[in-house]
Length: 145
Image (cartoon, rainbow, N blue to C red; front, top):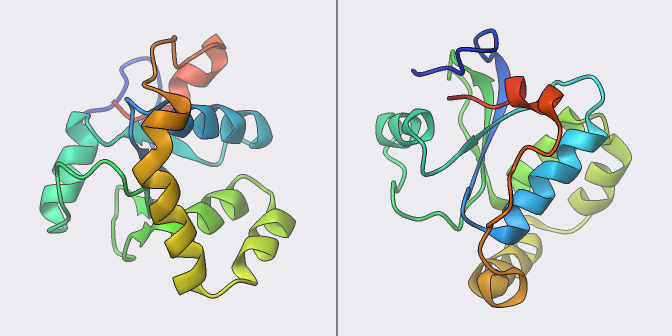
């Protein structure tokens, strides 16, 4: 799968997100800031690496409303974690287990109902992403592609 030529190949957890969504990009920027160890990598769902992953795992390639956490990129032995399970795994991966645990207290059905509601209204509330998604040069190597 394509990698950013300025960084080593991504290994470990990779968060696939909607690269055109204002909310999604704000969440990624926040995770980048929280993850001081640089454990998580990121790829937009619209990009070639994410699209190849989605096709290989029979996941929708045109539904950009579902966050996907790939636990062991590029091995891909573990199943992907979707929606709020992916959010919880991303928070844990970013070194924020307390926040992840707080969210995990709620049953998946309740969490995902809230997630699906936000996914439906996110463009109305936060708009499309028009700014540079990499405000800090040191974050460039944390993106797959």
